[in-house]
Image: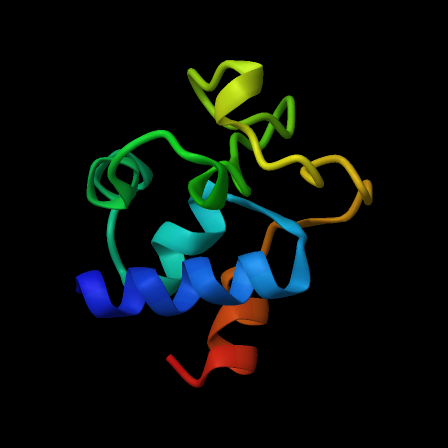
Length: 88
């Protein structure tokens, strides 16, 4: 499971696009709360994962957010995008 999380995280960092916790969790077949736990520490490379409503990483202070987090308004909200692009 951790390997797949790293694959998704690396992809999100490469495309520099926020992704909802729900989309990532659904792509992995887990609940969003479990995905947040598995994601680990609050650090810039994990800050691309955001809540659906506000488009913000939950509980992150500015120093923990990736400097390019808001470079685009686009947010991946569908697990299909991840499963298609990453062959999960």
